[in-house]
Length: 297
Image 1 (cartoon, rainbow, N blue to C red):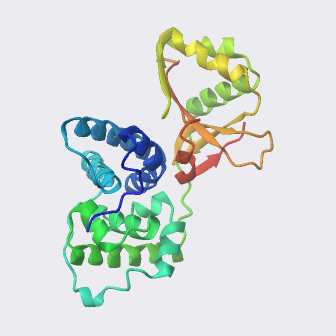
Image 2: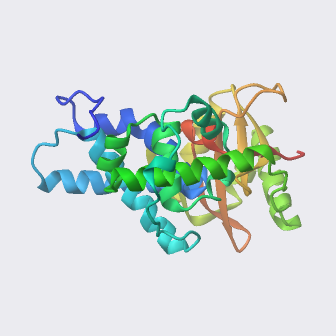
Image 3: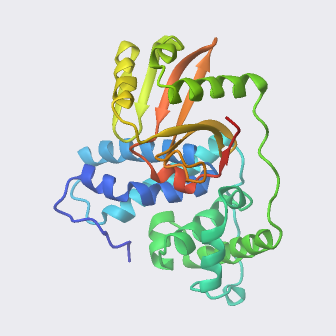
């Protein structure tokens, strides 16, 4: 039995992707250990799904089909990154704990992205799909192509490892930003908060690219309009930070320093100029999965 689709079959694939995108991101972020990499995979899934749908017949099981694409894309990403082994072996099913255990779901739901990276890929996908996203064994089999005994074995190992990690919290700090990274980030934030957008425009490369994730793309001179749009609104305040260890701009919709970031902006630099801006204003689900560290302004 496949995963029952929660999407109205009469709606377009674009609408289905919009509805399922946050859920797909929760899966991909935990598979890769990074909210930002997870969004990259979600974008890849969207492209692959649209291309495949153009040449396929009607898709009855939209949700399961999209998660199967996401699962395969995540494994491809991990192979490229070569960080985790993808092999597994079956274990005796009579030694497997109850796959519906509420305690295991609580442990998985509270686990950090870094903790999931301590599991092998097959363990990770099984635990995420069942304990984080709530799928059943047969649904996980449809998505992953694995047998029920293999899934049970992976759940047993993965849950055990997460319980071990939960008993000894990981207090390792993320690597500190270099002095140059910190200075660039702080300067951008200070100028943005001061609404000195002309000074920021002077920091842009001629061929700068901007992605308003899940919304729009611009390049070159078009990017000037992006800052003009921010100048028209006032419900934002930027702080420098790290997201899953990477330098990032954190955006709060309040000047209250205790407020949680609503979304993030990632900058890419080359030869002292900004060459790429990724603004997640329209993909706020990304920050929900991320490990966020606020840095001094």
